[in-house]
Image (tube, rainbow, N blue to C red):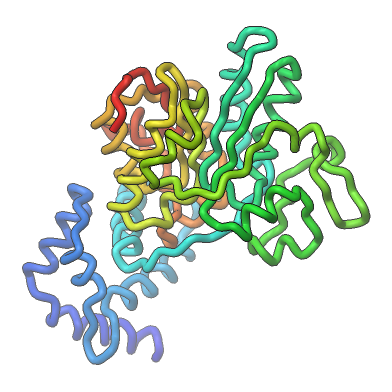
Length: 341
């Protein structure tokens, strides 16, 4: 089907969409309301064709042809937000294991600064949920232990996949690891960092022994209400890049369960999640956004920023015009309430 034929088909199908459905979709844009009925509307088909999918394909071709300076204009970004809303409504979400070492450097820097507030020789308890193949676990430990070797860092690494957890625990990354995650997990490291973090045998990397100490690998579901009983209270809880792959209602329930792990006065780091889901829970439970490095952290993972608005995990551009921007764009929160929801 040519571009003109696609456009013609889309216009023909436009009449098949009732005004009620179109109104519902506008509600989604303006108020960020999601509902199974709206998802069905977005997935509506005529003669086996999806008008919404055609609409997105046509818009993607136009979007990719726009200069970057035009994409950054507020009206264009607002339109991009609508496109991303439609992408999310159409998406059939699933888990991915793609990751990188030192994936978000500003976030790791904030963890380093917060760990630096600990007394000499203190114990620091960290839980990393959805730890995947271990890149985030070892990145966190390298960042903190390099700066504060005096601390006793105890880390619980949790994942729902036994196979992935076993891979992570070994701490050995052969050349074909990139096939597992879809990209080289070392691509964001400098040569000096490669030497500091790994023992190399040709292209095969093994995490250094001082980084593999103090880790307890846990086969568990982050949504399980018994998680607090299993792990106990934590100074820092990290939940990165897996909640966005869950249905929105499941992600919200999981997030409410995860925060129960944080000791009063501790910190929750949560990225890779639908922003309105995180914002809703944060406001409901009174989380305190950490202002330090907030914008740098939001923009700290170029891969998810580049995937917006065409993937459900894509991260929207920073928009300080929003009244809720401090909460919406914070990926780090101080949890002061004793509330356990």
